[in-house]
Length: 189
Image (tube, rainbow, N blue to C red; front, side, top):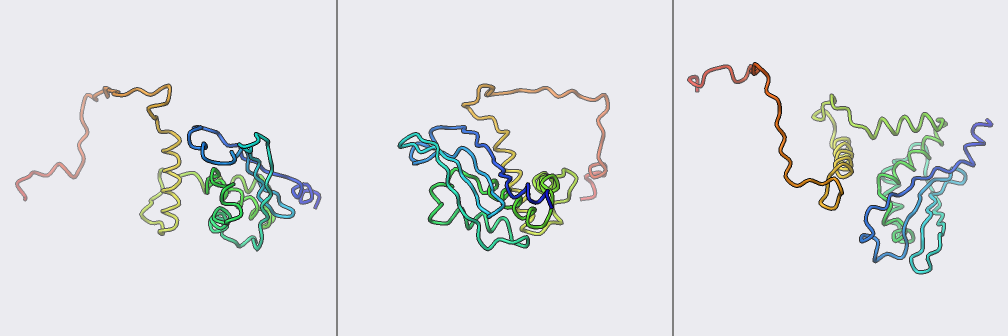
């Protein structure tokens, strides 16, 4: 019981790496941190007002969310809410989904460590997993995770380690291994 009381006062924050200042020029605020409060449930955004340069906090209450709620849908609804839309432009949908997953785990009675492990399993891709066997929703989720990972690891022209035309020599094995599909002769066709 004391563990649940300590969780009630716990706030989880995600820091924002600011990669490009050009992207934020036309906005009235710059997001610094986004977190969740469990009791009463709310998303908390800490942002900097560009007009006055002050650090401010916006509390967005989470209503009608239970341990059975869909985190993706809740994140989309909050991000598209007219009252909060301009403040959440810099917050990715994936980050909001993670925060709602923390809330769902708390409402289900999971510990913070269990919830973090569950989120880690959901957001990592198993290279041995057969993606052909997934339904459309799960496949779209896996593809978005792969796209996010690609964007994060992509080398751009502005990066300091960017090299334009990289040529790599791959070592040749002494014997080339042949596959079974190409061993038959072409005379059969």
